[in-house]
Length: 150
Image 1: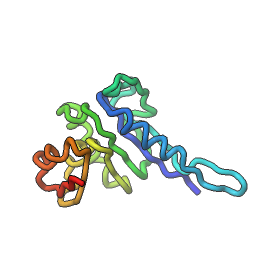
Image 2: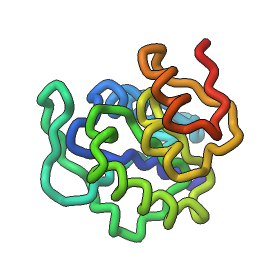
Image 3: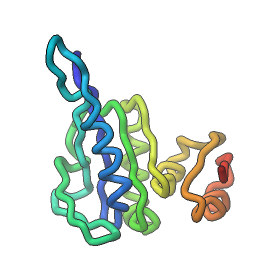
Image 4: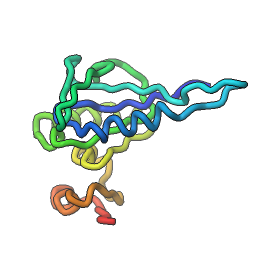
């Protein structure tokens, strides 16, 4: 069975936990194969540059590949972080996600990653949630979403 590719977008100002937590969950998922176990998913961190980027807390990450690679992606995860509220970072991410979305089976965000995903229009009319601190701001910025505070 082919391992499904889960790609994560990395950017300056990413929330480290929003990036590392889901990566750990996917890399820990094992598939039984005979008497052995193998990873069920292949994970990659993609970024808009091949240079390392820093999280909000100062942790430095090195991307596996640039977003320009023709990587086949099954699931795309957009982590949160203050960097996504930067218009420069957000506009690049939104344009790239819109371009690649038709070829990706599932796209989701973690916490304030909704700032990148909602801006694509892919969530319009859908029920969404985010961290309680950002619920009102997200509802104001994206009125076409059904923001659930709980």
